[in-house]
Amino acid sequence: MGLKQIRLYGDNPVYSFSVELDAVIYIFKISYNSWVKKSFLQISDVDNNVLISSIPLSMGVDLLAQYQYMENIPKGNLFLYNKNDFSDIQRPSYPAVLLYNEAI
Image 1 (cartoon, rainbow, N blue to C red):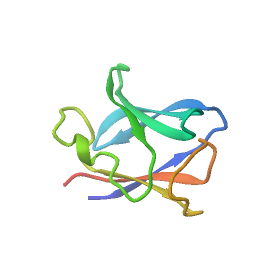
Image 2 (cartoon, one colour):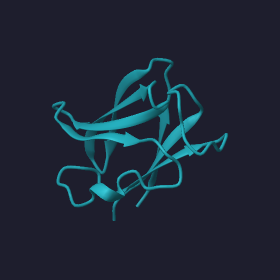
Image 3 (cartoon, helix red, strand yellow):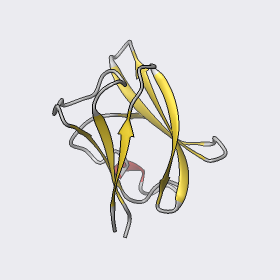
């Protein structure tokens, strides 16, 4: 079991990147909703099939916990960490990382 850091970056309100979790490649899409002033995560498979959408990026919660019953999603724990210790992340350009704790 290992811990993986996934750096979040970008000044664009929407951006995507690929990440390997538990030996599977996923596409993460971060998008900022200006109406609610919050960023959200979408997880897709390598063929761009959306697996989970509209996960609010909030600190202090396992972002994947409520989806563990689903097939084809990462089975570990995913947390948002921000060194400035904000309770929630608004804009997508910030010094934050997602921490993924691999499944056993």
